[in-house]
Structures are given as structure tokens and as C-alpha cells.
Image 1 (tube, rainbow, N blue to C red):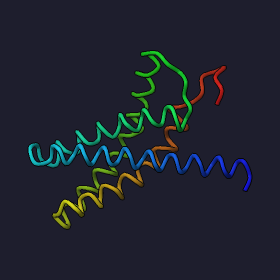
Image 2: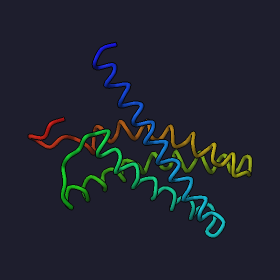
Image 3: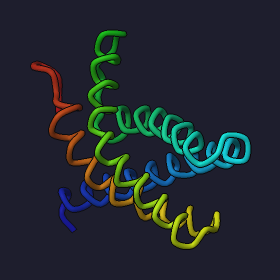
Length: 140
């Protein structure tokens, strides 16, 4: 196996692991609030928790972004969030569809996992192209 293939496999494995961790954080947060706030509140809270977890992991371990400072974090987190808006609609739509069709928490979460998986694949490509672009003079 070539060095590039190993690097690609490692990146894909790591990204999948982090997507899974963010998904678990998202669904865990949803479970904490769904009975008190309903599905809409659970979606928003879960998405916020998952977003922060995934940003921190992606910045450091996927895109190896060493740029620091409040201005850089604010700019990148804003772009990261913006790239996630479309993919979040995919996730919310799939989760809500599964909830509406089957009406069970289990199937709602199956829909969430499917929606998040599709969303994360799209999001990786958007983040790579628009968010974590190396600053001039910074190693890629």
C-alpha cells in the first residue's frame, strides 16, 4: 500500500471516528432535552453540541489547522457553521422524515444517523475547500 493510500485511509478513518463522536454528542444532547423541549429544541441543542465537538476535532486532527487567535477562530467557526447550514438541513430533514413516518425514537435516530452521514461527507469537501484553507506561509 502506498504512503498516499495509507494517509488517505487514516484520514477517512479519523474523520469517520470524529463524525461518530459528534453524532453521539448530538444525539445525547437531544435525549437530554427532547422530553422537556420537543423535537425542534432537541434538534437545535443537539446540532449546537455536535457542531462545537466536530469543529474542535476537525480543526486540529483532520485539517491540521494551527492558526490561532480569536479573530481566526471566529472567522473559521463562522465559515464552518455556514458550510454546515445546508448539510444540517439534510440531517434535520432526514431525521424529521423518519420521525413522521415511523413515529418512534429509534427510527428518528436511524434517520439522524443517515442524515448526518450524508451531511458529513458533503461537509468535509466544503470545509476542505472553503474553511481550512492554509494561510500563506503555513504548511498544508
